[in-house]
Length: 325
Image 1 (cartoon, helix red, strand yellow):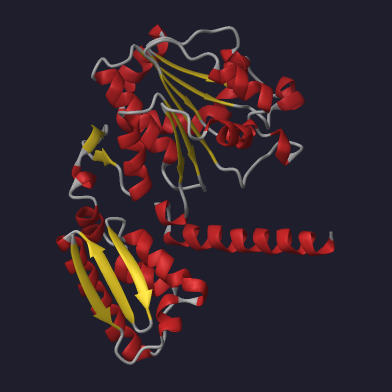
Image 2: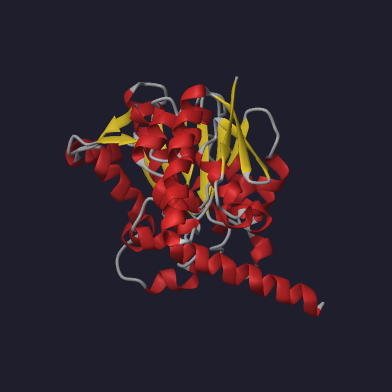
């Protein structure tokens, strides 16, 4: 264990750490392998020497930036602290491991701390719940794990499913047979598979049932053995639907649920089975719950700020409702 103290020369600690240490908490999140303690105008670092050295270099850049521009906010922290070199160092090179190679030869890897955690939990948990905002790569990483498991003969089938909430009663008015009507709701799953499996091979696997893509309602009555099963948009599964789905789990199977509890399309938020599942199943051996956040967003850089803006608005409205009550 290495310790080091970094002095904040000429910087107001409130500016560096933020109100209630909000910025310090964000800095800590970017350096998971060291412990940071703020004391006056000092930051005490404890942990791995290599990580502390990198942290000290980054803090030196931040201090120099503040002294020059007399400002520091979350966007500045993100720009200075969250980059590929840091992510590789903070994870001891784990981000270099390719899960699968895409159809264009491009390696598919975990790209954020929580994506990497999802990969690691795969080895110890048979049921994983990955909850967090859109664009964090929850489903994409899960499908990459599924494709790898199938290619390594760890499972015999991949089963991908989503609740077709938006379809509802209007489904019957759409043109085509049942597959034509449901495919638009399942398209994101097809897109991810096409990135990782050659089209001809994917068509063959879909035809022979090695890869199955179906709405959640089609899971009723089945026992899914030796399967890698992914339930996408799990926040839109009702309590009864999710209980039905989870009890389909058979021997030698892996289940991953992905969802965003801020985007529940059910009539009432309390109808969401994902909220209940997280509450009831957290802490059970063999079940892992991973909370993704805006730091994991890998889409356009503006998506991170959009998510943050909506979260702030939602928290503000929630506080107003509490005050009214």
